[in-house]
Amino acid sequence: RKEVEQDPGPFNVPEGATVAFNCTYSNSASQSFFWYRQDCRKEPKLLMSVYSSGNEDGRFTAQLNRASQYISLLIRDSKLSDSATYLCARSSNTGKLIFGQGTTLQVKP
Amino acid sequence: NAGVTQTPKFQVLKTGQSMTLQCAQDMNHNSMYWYRQDPGMGLRLIYYSASEGTTDKGEVPNGYNVSRLNKREFSLRLESAAPSQTSVYFCASSPRSTEAFFGQGTRLTVV
Image (cartoon, rainbow over all chains, first blue to last red; front, side):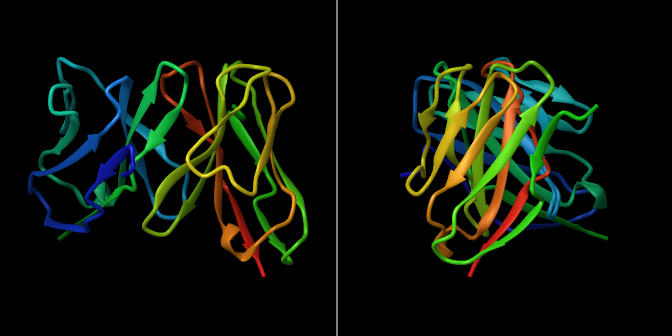
């Protein structure tokens, strides 16, 4: 079993929709969690870190549930420009940074 | 700002050839990583270096070696390339267990 798992999708949603992605992890020693965005044929870039208390950045909200070992990303009022692959990641206190396989989002007009 | 620089950007190798992918960062980060990305597989960790002088295996280390030459540079070597190593390779660096910054990737084809 992969240490970090995501539903690869694709998620096809209309503009303006709300969409949510989940990511489960199996290593309870995981220390920090992140969501990255990757555009086609580009390098991943950090979208947001995920804190236990939850955090919000504009239309994006990230949550961490340590008891159930998952993190989530909620995108409200989807834009065409949100179309991308979203990768979750977790790091351990040894410095190991592991990614999920990514979830593809396609926002349609 | 250069950030993380990878060379080369593209490479075609014949089966059995060797090559080294170079990576350098100018952000004074402690940790550096090498990943490969294949369709539908996300980013898989090959090797990482939590600090200068240390290296550790990741999820898919077989067929690869690494060298953390100094704090700035972390190279990935393929001793005898195989078609299964055709992939996009990303190098990344981070201060320590925090946000990772990626290079632009190396597209490697082994024929």
